[in-house]
Length: 423
Image (cartoon, rainbow, N blue to C red; front, side):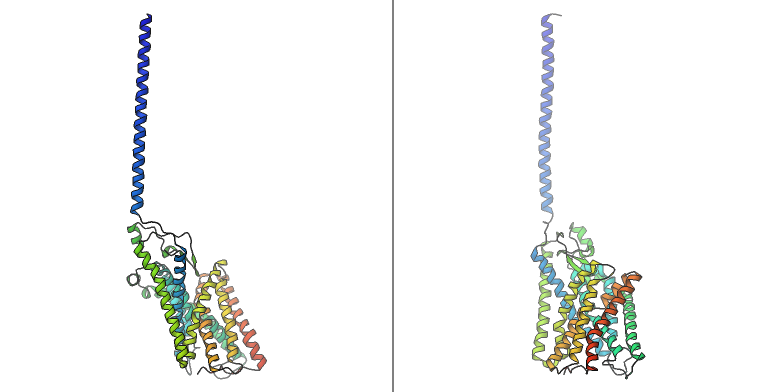
């Protein structure tokens, strides 16, 4: 092969090599442009997707305050109605020759409503979470009263203020023992009955039309909203439900529409206004209409305080599922205060106003601080050993407190005078 032929062949190879490199450079440039275009499309799609969905709103500190105000307002409002229901049931059950003790029907009615509310808890929470808390803790807890039960049982044992013919010895024991067993058995049966009739008392479609505050599951899917609703244990206001209380959930986020947020945020203010109005009305009536003081007004004034204290104590229930310390402490504290009030009502020379205020603390504060309805629902959920232990400790502690406070005063004075007059 000549030198010229060899050089020509090298030139051809170099030319082919340059051509291949050029094609690779073109392909690389084309891929780069395609990648950049794809990136621009992805950014545009992301921006479009973000603009098509509501902005995620994390509950603010103010939102948390409004949520707490809604719960406390609902509790206070329902405590008024629960107290009035208890006093009314006691009034219609108190007469000469009554077959049962007067507080029994209040315990039965409160536990029956509690059983129905607990059975439809999920539906009520989907409507508005504070509604369930208000009905269960506010209404039912205020209709029933553990401290009044303990006082009636002890007075049966000691034959204090007995409405029956005088008796003693073994009959005193039968008086207190009968009130203990009948109240407990009737309350448990009433709670079971309430759970059976719950579908007829709470018609969910009707309630939704009355108060469509939160989106239903269907609305949630339709709108693409990821707002956590109360049926899942959460709500749009940064609170989550517990079996015995209501706690904040700082991780809760909502994607509700601004209009829905405004409606929900306005409701706590409305409930607070209703509570304050009712409270002020009770105070004004107590000041300017003296004849109503001892009947109900002072009781209404003190009722929310007892309900709120019981609500916050209920947060201790999660510490030990086999022994609800929150409910236990609420019942025992209320029983101790009531024992002291009963002793004060039957000793010394009390003025009319003092007697009326003491009666308000008796029926209003202690009656709403202590509860049989929650006590019964906790008993129903426990296993057999925990159930009997909880009932025995609660009943025994209540009677020991009555013995140490009211019984000591009775023994030292050789008997107690009748309660001071309210009119």
